Structure formats: structure tokens, C-alpha cells
Amino acid sequence: MKLSVVILTKNSAKYLREVLESTEFADETLVIDCGSSDETEKICTEFENVKFHFQKWLGFGAQKQFGVGLARNEWVFVLDSDEVILPDLKNEIIKTLENPEFKAYKVARLNYFFGREIRSMGLYPDLNIRLFNKKFAKFSDRAVHESIQTTEKIGILKNHFKHYAYESVSQFIEKQNRYSDLGAKRNVFKAIFSPGWTFFKLYILKGGFKCGFDGFVIAKLYAQYTFWKYVK
Image (cartoon, rainbow, N blue to C red):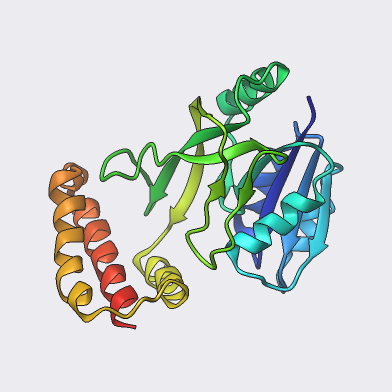
């Protein structure tokens, strides 16, 4: 069964070649770009199965659903421009689509922070629906933290893909500042109390202390993001 991969981009050249190499097994890869000024479009021309489309930014949910709507195949895998399908997952996807038991599948994501993989803090397996039959599932229209909606039973694939989450503290702060703008819900009570709970949950309850100083920094940054989101 043929597969379409959908990827959103904007100035995504850094990892894009590796990302697109990992999707060469798919029948088509649809790159939905909202205005790159780097080599994103040029890199796309290097791959025979890649189709580049410009679409003015609609918000994460609507932008991804736009890409899904362009897919010529029923089965779709949605990937970010800093996420890489690893060989074991590729083989599992191919085998699964030979005789799909479900209409949608959750897939694990292995996040890399500051150059190291993080398997604790609730950041792994970080399961979300990524592989689905577009006749039975669609994205919500949320501007941020979008999700795939379906009434069908959901399967879980065994293997994960790799996510280059954040290379530095500066990158984390910049990205989460944008996300907190999009997801802002002003709430003074939560702005005061949620950051402390977020840090305690990630660093103590979810085992962030096992990651040493990196775990402390990650928990602290997520706590700060929580503060930004509710104070804005």
C-alpha cells in the first residue's frame, strides 16, 4: 500500500536533507512551506519523490491538514522538519501497511536535547498518532499543540523516530517563547503555581535527576515555559 509523508517547513535546511533521505521509501513526500528564505526549496529538488508546495501559514493544525488534503494516497505519515524516520521504523511501516489492522497508529519519538537522547522525564516514548488513513482521521484546527482526531481504534508501532528537539538553551527559549504566544491562556493562579509543579513533576517524579545537570536544565526550562504561557 502506498504512503504519503507530509512535512511542514520554514527555513528548515539544517536537518532537511537527512529527513528527506529517511522518507525516500514513501511514494511521495509533500513539503508544505510557509515562506523559507534559506535552501529549503533547493534541497527538496534533490529528491524525486518530494513535492514542494507553498502555503501561507494557517496554524499548525490547519497547515498539516492542508498537506494531508494534498496527499494522493489514503495512508499518511506526518513528520516535522527536524524528525527522522529510522530504518527499523521504516521497515515496520512498510510491513504494517501490507495488512493494516487499525486505521491509525501512534508512534514513539526519541527526543534529543543538547546533543543527547532523553529517555526519561516523560519525554519518551512521547507517543502520538503519526501514521493514519486520512479517510478516518484528521487534524484539529488548533494553532499549537494540534492533534489527530479519530473515532477508530488506534494501534501502536514498536519502533521510534528521532527528533532533534533542541541543540541549545537559546534555541529552546526562542522556540518556546513562540509556542507560548500561540498557546497563551492568561491565568494568574496557574502562572504562580504551575511552574513549580512542572519542575517537580519532570525532575523528581519523571526522573529528570537521572539525566544530571541536563535534566535539571530541561525541567527548569519547561517550568519557565509554563509561566510564560499563563502570564501572557
